[in-house]
Length: 130
Image (cartoon, rainbow, N blue to C red):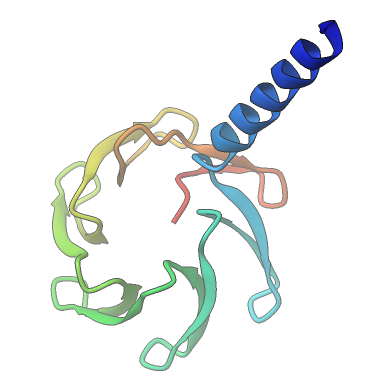
């Protein structure tokens, strides 16, 4: 009986740990830029023909023009342009993003609610997953 309880407790712990890890970013290597990017776990490497670059983006992303910054960003259709008054720039961001301060980099950025900056050991910087 103790073995069953111990096994059940271990299974619950492992499942909880897996669910906990999925809420955070991870490092993925971009062989086209030679850089490690802080991304969401479901991000895919995609080519933006207008910007001429490969980047990790949400699976349903496509090139989206940001007229305020005169650039093409990879983003899902639901993303919108929002002004960041602290950095004096327009960001293409998800509708549920909030303006958050990154104390490690001293910058403000839109990031999904509840997300924290992740340390990228390859670049030595703290980044919000994209």
